[in-house]
Image (cartoon, rainbow, N blue to C red):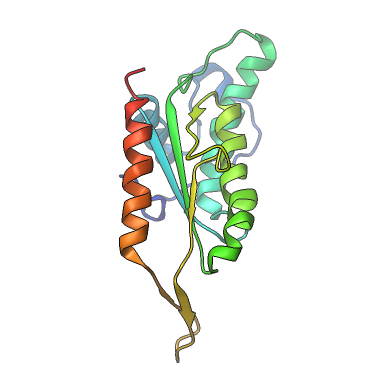
Length: 174
């Protein structure tokens, strides 16, 4: 498991130096994460819904896209290091079930678009949820803190996640 909050990622500057090395010349933390993903049999991206996705995830995806795009632009037959790695997407947020379609559009579809660019194989949850799964909170309550307190139905969430993870993992060896 890679927790992006533990890494000091920097945004892409568009310098193009990654074209030769297929790594970022100025971001050791990105390279560490990129190597782990490239060496994996599959990957899951878990993202909360805000803005629409966290900044560090944007930076990671941006650099992965840049590396792949630069090579693909020069050779349309290029296959990235991420080529056909199965990828699951799990999003969650502070709204109820009614908000799930907006999570799909803003979080799952955004991540899936980037993963498609880097040539990962995004695994659907269902025909309707073709870019992973989104999970809603059961309730959101106010508190004295500046952030709301989110209540979850862990039983339902665990069942949905287990079902999806099992399906995605089956794709690892295909």
